[in-house]
Amino acid sequence: MARKTANDDPLAPLTLAVGQEDLLLDRAVQEVVAAARAADADTDVRDLTPDQVQPGTLAELTSPSLFAERKVVVVRNAHDLSADTVKDVKAYLGSPAEEITLVLLHAGGVKGKGLLDAARKAGAREVACPKMTKPADRLAFVRQEFRATGRSATPEACQSLVDAIGSDLRELASAVSQLVADVEGTIDEAVVGRYYTGRAEASSFTVADRAVEGRAAEALEALRWSLATGVAPVLITSALAQGVRAIGKLSSARGGRPADLARELGMPPWKIDRVRQQMRGWTPDGVANALRAVAEADAGVKGGGDDPEYALEKAVVAVARAARSGGRG
Image (cartoon, rainbow, N blue to C red):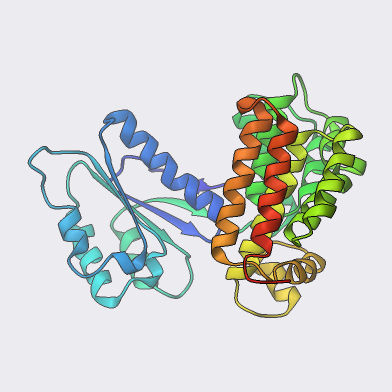
C-alpha cells in the first residue's frame, strides 16, 4: 500500500511519489488528477516522460494563464531528468505557481538524489510506493484492497488469493475487483478456490499458453473444452491478459539470469523460463494488439456483447496471430 506523509492534500503544490511499484505510482498520479478535476472539471493534465521535459519546458507549462486554469503536471522517472532540467525543477520548487500541481515520480535510489532531497526540503507531499517483495506485504495489500471496496474477505481467502496470483500487484488488484463484482457477501477461501485454483485455473491457463505460443488450433480446442466443463469466461480473459502482459514485461526487461529477472519482474524463476520460450515471434506492436483484443473480449464476456464464446474465440485467434507477428513459423 502506498504510504503518505502528514501532508495528505492531493492538491498540494508538489506531490513526490517515491518507489518502483508501478501500480502504486499510477495510483498516486490518479489520486492527484481526480482531486484536481473534482475542484475544476476542466483541469489540464500533462503527463510527461524525461525526454519530453527539456530545459525551459517546466517554465512554459507553469507560466501564468490568461484563463487561470488549474493544471496538473506529471513528470515520470524524474531521476532520469538531465542536469539542466533538474536545475529548472529546483528553481520552480522555490516558487511554485498557483493552481498548478506538480507530481514527480522518482525511483528513490541514488540516481537523481539531489532532486529528491530538494523536493523534500521544499515540503513536498510524499507518497511512498515501494516494491512489495515480502509475502506479508502483498497479503496486507490484498486485505486493504478488499477494505477499500467495503467488502469482507476472510484471512484464508486473502492468503489463497496471494498464493494463486503471486507477486504482481496489478493482477492481485484485478482479482479483488473481479471477486467483488461477481460474488455477493463475504468472500471466503472456497470462493477464491473456485475462481483461481484447481481445474479452472489449469484449463484457463492452458488456453492462454497455447495462444501466446501462436498455436491457434490447440488454443481454440482448449477453449472449447474449458467452456464445456464450466470454466467462467472471465477466468479465460484474465489468463490471456496475464500471459500477454508477461510477454510484454519480459520483452522490455534487460537480459539476465532467471533469478535476477524474477526479482525484477515479480515472477517465479520457472515462469521466466517458460515466458522466454513463448516470447519468440512477439513484437511490441503484437503485444499492444493482443492486449486490445483481450480487453475487447473481457468487455464482451462481462455483458458488452451478445456472444461471450465468440468474443473469446476472436481474442484467442488475435493473440495467436500476434504471437506469430515476428515471422515465427
